[in-house]
Amino acid sequence: ILGLTCYWNGAIVFTTCLLLLFFCCVSKYRGDFLIIMVVTLLLGALEKLFFAGSSPTLFHPRWFVGFVSGKTDFWGVLFFYIELLGILPFIAFIGTLFIPKEGCGIFWVSFLLILLSTLFCIPAQAVDNQKIVMIAIILLDILAANFLIVLFSSKNILKQFVAACLLILLTITGIVEVFPSYYNLMQKKDIVLNLYDPARIWILNHVNPKDIFLTGGDPFFPAMLAGRKDFLNIVSPVDYNVEERTEIAQKIYAGAYPDFRNLEKVLLQNHLRYVVLDNDVRQNPYFNPHIPVINMPFIQKYFKLVYEDKNENLQIYQTY
Image (cartoon, rainbow, N blue to C red; front, side, top):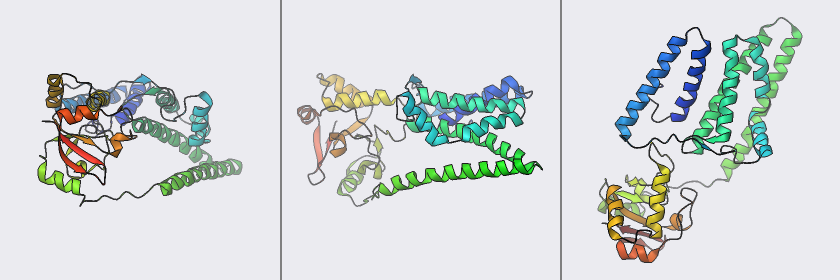
């Protein structure tokens, strides 16, 4: 199962392989763990070859302090993890004293995962680094739970009392995390998907299902709701080079192709049939904040305007 999900859950497979590698070093069943790891990596390689061919992998770790926390200074990162983890790491560390030596390594693997997610941007999106941190927290939870079970199983009343206090404290710190998350959720506006949007209806009637749109990466753009493809699928990029595609989008919008033959070659290679100008593109949204100032004379010269909605400030241009 782990190998079959490798293509879509690279962050989880990455962390699991670190665990398997550790167990290969310390466990007497190292051969079994080695076979699992090899089969996982082999299935992952075959899936990539099947779905993406020879395209370059997205696994390009780069130094990026505070990628998950959003803070680049030491104290900012430290307070982020104190708020996130609370007393869990301390209880988990104490819990390593009550388990075999193989289990003690789980704590240090968790620490390594958190350290990697803090110092490096591992895959293409922050959410993947967050998955790695979540797995590290799950491992710490296992150690903490084992420690509490040991204390509760003791006939010593004092140990049972300490276990109850720690359990209550862990529960309270977990509940506290719910309130800011609930508050942030309530501040967000409801997303309304208009299936009768004129742009969506036009796309359904006039655009080939295989044609690709160049947009600002908005996952709710009418083309996506009409079942068409988006060149900048920033929300869920699966094994394609986001940076390379972003650079192509920058050059097209900025008119950085003075030679029409080079422009036509890029459009045909990437099957880009339509270029979209809307508020998301003009305002440089979160989905694609690197698009420079739009070169309107360039777009109007080389592309044909096929759809316009002045009320929504939307234009769709056909490239070829």
